[in-house]
Image (cartoon, rainbow, N blue to C red; front, side, top):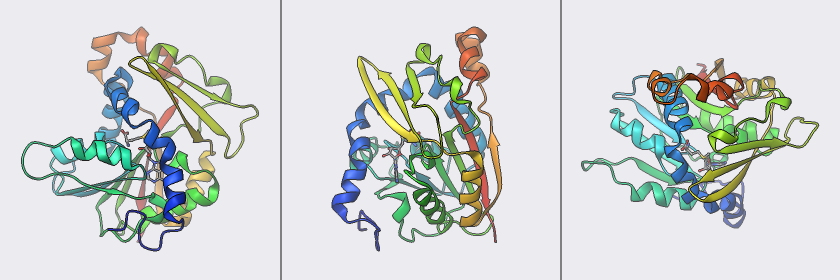
Length: 264
Ligand SMILES: C[S@@+](CC[C@H](N)C(=O)[O-])C[C@H]1O[C@@H](n2cnc3c(N)ncnc32)[C@H](O)[C@@H]1O
């Protein structure tokens, strides 16, 4: 399949430029998956929102190095296809073979430019929509996702938390990252995350949009039942690290769950 997608909006050179920041952080990002936050809050919440995937087909968008793609595969999905704009991320994903002969499928593609990939029961988007650099890109992502789902198909996402006050972008250093935005925060403001992975510091930028902006983009693309879900702490994480460890994160969550359903 054409990596840029048939009818791609951007020439390949530009698609490569758009992927460059993610190519550069592929390896440190892969290492960060072992952090307590990812294990005890993010994965627990995301997989909880996803629910039973046995015999379902799942399109894992912004799959990165396949962290969730592999978990969805292991949970018995009939088909799972991971898509990411970064060739370096997809290379890492393909290197990590699952037991047995059946493997997740992977595709390098900008979600804005997805070709018709077939009909999926569920689309997942763990950290995708906030990478839209403006409202036009957000709309294109939402429409492109909707095209891959039948009526009733679900979108399950984790995203930048639009409900978090700007003054709250602090207090995460004990968790190995920082989050900052230039004041005054407005629609499309770049938010910079800096993360420690091993001995390396890496940064990436996402964009701020209000809840109403996400909801309008999803509604215009043909989604309804848009719901925001506070992330939950796995009881095993409470037992392992104690309540005090989690208090600052849970009092001021930087990310949030998001689900929606494709209307008929
Ligand atoms: C923070 S990583 C999340 C990876 C994976 N979902 C996870 O949770 O481990 C975000 C990913 O989004 C990808 N991405 C950003 N914009 C994208 C786009 N327009 N289309 C496809 N992937 C995109 C990046 O390449 C990166 O791999």
